[in-house]
Length: 495
Image 1 (cartoon, rainbow, N blue to C red):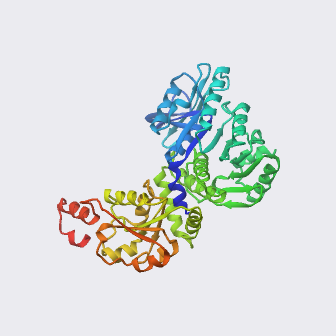
Image 2: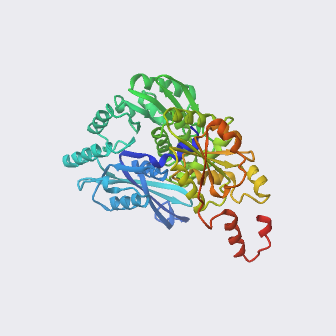
Image 3: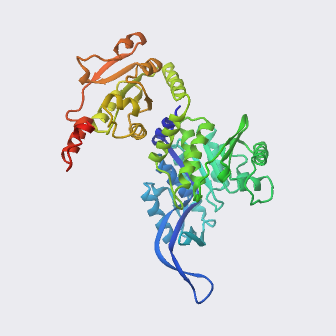
């Protein structure tokens, strides 16, 4: 399965997140002088930002990547809870799954920055003393959410949301439902019997879990490999992914060879929330059927995008999709995994439909064509002309959008299951390789010579011409744009 196809399917996933809900606040300003009352800077406030933190940030990352999210945790009946609910709704996350308890106070971490430098962090809140009725409400909501989810993510900062009762309910549920369980916890040993699919400690947490002293040195790969094997020996889980900041991720499994996935050196990286970004993308990749190594690689790429952003940030689906399309094109054998997946679908009796085109300046006509094509089968593969191919067909000033953006836009459409680039003038070789059951063309090809037609009978492919949406074409769209521009001399050049 291509990476872009994995990410393109994230929107189909219903993710359950349970953990410690927090509010992250940032007060920022400019320091111009020292305070006369003491040797501290006087900061003139210039802005304030409130975003989901802790497990709430994991939920926000999952939602930003396209998943439907159910987020369970405790909040107090206070201003910070109200701010957190507002922040969650801003990410289109239903805050109705949260359990409100007037006996507790919402966890809040306030960071003060002067000229982009951290000055101090204030922490407040305590969610450990929730009532018995609140615990029962959380367990009830958990049981309801489990029946609706495709992946479970536990984000435990040891503030009390994830109790033994919670892990017991999850473990009982998974005895009959084989869905991925990912655990990110400050105290991973407490999940030794959770039967997790993947546990994701950072290197500090991994060292602590096996009784090693804390270290400020960069993690050593060989040492981390030994620690990971110790953890696997004493924990009931399939895989452990030790996150090691600038050293990347070390993946170990009960029956697999260790895999080190390096990170990219990024100057001035913002690491706040990077672990949540890694966890979210890895979880969704597993939920749509990626193997553990591929899922972990996608998680690393998502974390890479996250650390390029300021503060506690999320990565949008389109950003990761664009990155994955780039990596897929860099692969030496870009079609190998796609062909394997299509062959498996063929054996299951599924009908494979194929459409090809440049898809420059995507418009309603393109969308309607793809929608009608998908109605003819189970899987829709869209073959897109590369930039070189498009220039040969359309002229030196086309395409308007480069292949990277065209690939991303088409992949994001609901009817599309797979996208692939080809460099030739026609996709004849690709059609021979994919062997679709149906090849779809627009009805404007009726009565014209279709270059791919001679090979279709040999491979058992049916040609279907579908009606086009009137008054929609990229060429006419370019004409309208240029006719409305002050300088119309470029019309013939672009066309």
